[in-house]
Length: 156
Image 1 (cartoon, rainbow, N blue to C red):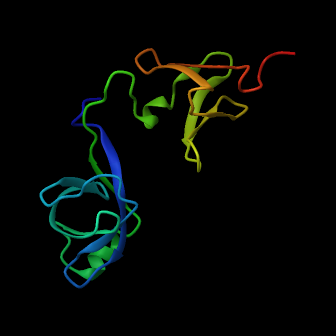
Image 2 (cartoon, one colour; image 1 turned 120 degrees about the vertical axis):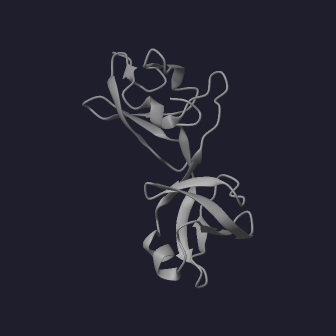
């Protein structure tokens, strides 16, 4: 997947603000400046207006011109291009489908308060996505190696 195709969640559409289609962004993780291209509810748009603070931005996007339309998007993720990954970096969603030798295939990634968890195999083993548990990730080979002793999975 190229950097242009990779998208990341920059926040979620919050409650409408005013009558012109503007809305609050919940949980912003990226800068949402005017002119930024976003994807919301499966369609592309451009941020036409930006107000509020970095922690609580208010934006209006192209194609949304009234309060009801903004309200209809509430809860939808705002996706922006993800950019280039550095050596050793990966997108969490790229881990789904990777093989964990001896445990099975990563079925999903579960967000948790302190770290994401990989749900692996038919037994749904939860592997914390931390350096002590995950020793190597090779997204090209689709393999994730884990420290079975750290996870308490060593055979007795």
